Structures are given as structure tokens and as C-alpha cells.
Length: 121
Image: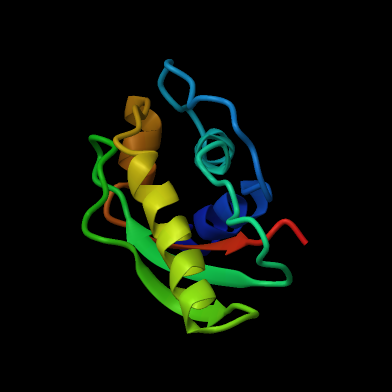
């Protein structure tokens, strides 16, 4: 089940979106992925890059701790790499707390997720 949840979450993350996270409780992993994608805006000028973050949620929608980068591939210099990783980490942390339905909270609480944040190109 954990692999299925992680796969669905990763598949639901879009490259970029600017809408606010919705106010009603999230009911599915797809809803969670869509909500997280709305918080991600790739840094300008960085292309062909990604960072994968590892994290977990509590049932109350908060992160279990700071997201941890597990894979980083950022084009450019050290400052661009640092900016990209910080943008992804800030996007995830800034998106929480989220409001989960009881069913979703029970399903995902305590699980470890990995999510890849990609540049626009």
C-alpha cells in the first residue's frame, strides 16, 4: 500500500501551478498530489533540473519533520542548486498544514513519501 500511495502522489504532482490550496478536506492521494502541486513554482532560469524530497505527514496534516532531499540534479552552479532545493523544500513546508479527511489521514499518517519537484523545462 505504501508504494501505491507514493506512486499516486508522485504522479499527481504537476510541474507548476499558482492557485491556492483548496479549503475543503483532501479525500484521496490524488487530491493530496493536486494540492501539493499548487504550491510549487520552479525558480526562474533553472532548466532540466529536479530534486526529490522525502517526508511524511501526521494525521493532522502537518509534516513529521523537515523534508529531506534524496536526489538532486540541478543544472547550473552551487547557488542555483541551493536555490532550487530551497524552493522545493519551502514549497512543501509552505503548503502545510493540509486538511485531510479521516479516511485519508488514516491511510497516509506515518508513511514516508518521496516526491520529485521538476523545473519547468
